Length: 467
Image 1 (tube, rainbow, N blue to C red):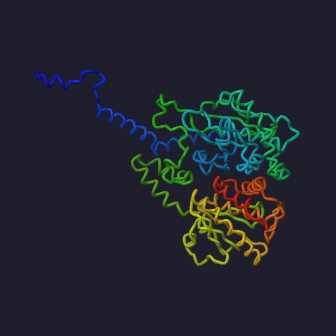
Image 2 (cartoon, one colour; image 1 turned 180 degrees about the horizontal axis):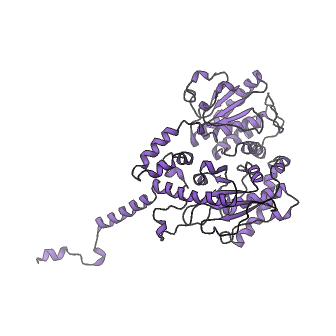
Image 3 (cartoon, rainbow, N blue to C red; image 1 turned 180 degrees about the vertical axis):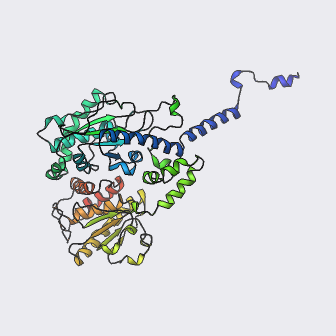
């Protein structure tokens, strides 16, 4: 062999290079991971887990509550008694909290009527249950027990799942409960009416696919408490079992990253069609169904946000409403011509377009736009002493809620009566604003103004010149 050939050979192991093979292996690994996390596998996993949730609810005789948004995927509409909004972040270690925005008071009547409830949620791989079920719900139960049943000390104890929450963490959370109760009292909720809605203290229990044999209380009038069963929908996947092939634990989590606009409601409406499709065809089918359902009635509900009052409403789309039925319409982030198929129905004398735009940019723009709201409401009340007002935004839960909150703070007294000239005697600070927001979230539990929206509201109300 010529010497030149010997010189071309590698002289050490470290000089050996397989760039093509290395890149091919890395590329193949990525493709395999993407394939296992496909939309088809996610929907199939959700359907499988939902069967477990439905079976548990049926065996216990309890109504099923979906803890939005992840939990909403695991409860078919026909099996769903309601929705809850317990955040896992309020149960994260060292971040424990009782949410003053997400009060979940809408559950009380459901629990009392059915002598308990089951709350369904899930979590991604690596955990046996979400922090929302392990800690946020137990905190909520204790706070409500101490608010509504002050003489029943048995309800004061914090119950958490053994093996998930350790003794040290339980002690730390327990030490904070008094502060959480004080925060709840500062909201000045109508405790008397809440006591009518709930006649027994609450007690959490837990069930997962691995612990289905746990002894759980069935619905019974003889119990001294109402069971709140926290049900984790997904089994804990290790990746080593044959059952794990194609299965995704907590598949419904972070749906914005994989659903391509598909919602849980649309999925359950077309479940059979979607799961009958091939994995290759699923993306195209999802696009078709999303377009088909885009303008259906479920996206166009109108909600009263002042208890039994029929004065203030929020909606996801002005097109959802018969705008002529309102004395004033505030359009937060839509162009007037896009809000209805009949733009001429919008009387510009009775409508205000803030043109904030969607998302975070819209929340930031809201600061400058809010100064236009009080003069508009004053003009409406000068013509109609007890006006019916509609606030609209793209979601029906963010900007529209923020603007309605401003109106509640400036134009309504503590007894929910309208002050037409906007001269309420209350001193407006952050605590006052939180109390008014509690009015809204009690009437509309999915109201969820973003941090940026609330910052805009707080800045406008607190820093504005006092007449």
